[in-house]
Image (cartoon, each protein chain N blue to C red):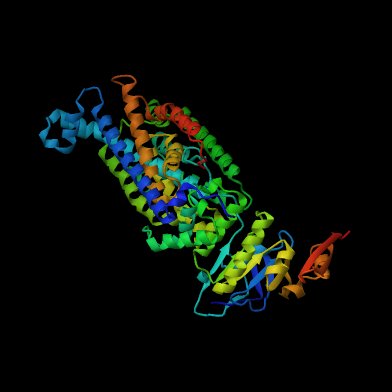
Length: 251
Length: 355
């Protein structure tokens, strides 16, 4: 089990700096951290930088120093690429990178287990091109899980899901995280999801970190006005959960 | 999230996957049998009529056959038939990998201007005696063809990696390259001597008739060398079709993989063109047929593409010999005439999405 912390993390595309000075507290194994911010704020860039896909200043600290970037898995936003592959093959593909051609029974059993855990066994031999947006997201999660990461970076995994599936997927990830010790960072647009499922939150806007800390402290009315330009209240519902209630946009 | 169970759930995913692999392996075996038959028929056809059994006997026991039969089969027909096989395989694999790395169903050596560039390079040598790489003048034609093809391939590659360049833009750039190199080729034809003009025209129509054993050996060697390189990267190349970000997230150096593949593809596309001229259709259609048959897992897609391309060109060679008895029509013309209707039938009967 691995905890992760970011120190003055930045990212560059060529000579252009697109992200600067992101520092977080320790994101513990078994915890979920929301990364929030407006569109094009730099959330995906942050994830790519943490996963080592782009370069830049700063450090990514893992609690187990013997473990390297291979323990971090980035799950990008779905681009809708329609490879002529079945769901089963696409998950196998994620597991087999860097391996030989031979496919072992143990690898196939693991795919079966992940499909069952996500309740998508019926999709196993459907083509990727036949899937709905929500089904594709679930397949992406399966592709990530098959690689047995200890830190999982999920880039807007609920964006194409209906409300029922959003709750189901986030609940599944929360349970998985707590039971297996997986540290999850998840980019979200729905702040109520962040309040409900995430222990910590990092706020990114215009390529900079605006705030970082416990979710119920970070998501505030001031933040909503300054970063999202909306008038909103944070109130507790009848069950005692904090909720964001949006009254309108800031003129 | 819970989907309606279907009959496939009666067996475990593991068993169903093994069945899928078996089905694909059988399809590849059938392609091999089809190719063997087509190449045999190709060797049996010609101005002199020989029975297929005599031809097969001559192939497997050359010294048991008469001298004339041996010469006709081994020195004339076999190089042509095997050239069709190797060129078809080369062009189809080149097209398959271009479609893979550019994520573009229209990509092929022909549509993106690689063949036109190779043709122009070869014409430079034939018409003007210009060697792009001056130290190897005896191999001027294939080397010119390769270098020009590589230049065109690199241009397409770097254009495709620029930010904001869409898939459609790459195709447009390819079409622009085709027009540019065809215009330059026309200019060379205009300036060429009668003899050089004939050689250049031979190219543009594509022909297998000048196949020789050394040319077959060179083309085959390239396929034999390149296929294991692609095979070694089979999982990575397949992952590219999941999208660039997804592939990178799986630990693949996408930029490097694309560049290496593009360089290799230019070799695969250029050498056949320098020997047999422009054959446009195979590199586009061979991979699509393979994809419809076995999907895009490169462990199956790669051999299936090679086999489909080889079979298509071999079958076209057979048709080109049988349409007008005694004459062999230009193969480049025949691939389009025979292949396009066949491809239409496949597209309209294969409703399942295949790109």
